[in-house]
Picture 1 (cartoon, rainbow, N blue to C red):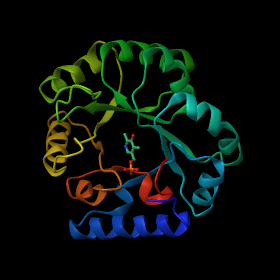
Picture 2 (picture 1 turned 120 degrees about the vertical axis):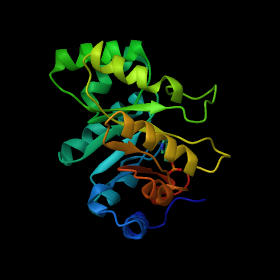
Picture 3 (picture 1 turned 45 degrees about the vertical axis):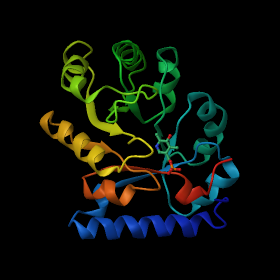
Length: 224
Ligand SMILES: *Cc1c(COP(=O)(O)O)cnc(C)c1O
């Protein structure tokens, strides 16, 4: 894959596909937030996508976001930023400063750090708990069988408001069962938001109830 020749056209295609996927399962397209994943891309690639009307962006690193986004955001104060990659507890302060949503809450030490920073800064990003649906050793996230207890601890021990769940299916698995499992855990815990689906599978994710799809390469082109 090469960089998208025309990110505005690519964005329009993705939006059309989202609308079609919603129509197929009788969902309101307004209930699906498209997160344009701009990791590795600079302002020159991001600006045309903002100009085309996109306002929600995803990044996977605190450091890259801090280096890249402050000037872009100053010029476009209505842009919101979502952290979709793993978060170290010692970066919780910056993450709470920089992001409007954090999709990777997955352990008690991070809950503790987030609770502290949210209290201090009086700023509360929307929080998602990441579920490691494929139980992959190298992947972040809470194991499915530990999810209910972890969500209870988020609420009762740390006083955090968790709004939804996030998952990243294993690369070589069919994604549908992972989306279904994530949706099931969310439903039984009364969580409304589901962050699932990337460039290759966001239409399937919408079928399974995704409220947030994280789409990078289909908009920006391939990453180097
Ligand atoms: C990079 C990334 C994406 C976007 O992936 P594409 O395949 O380029 O759409 C989505 N979610 C997470 C967690 C990512 O790190």
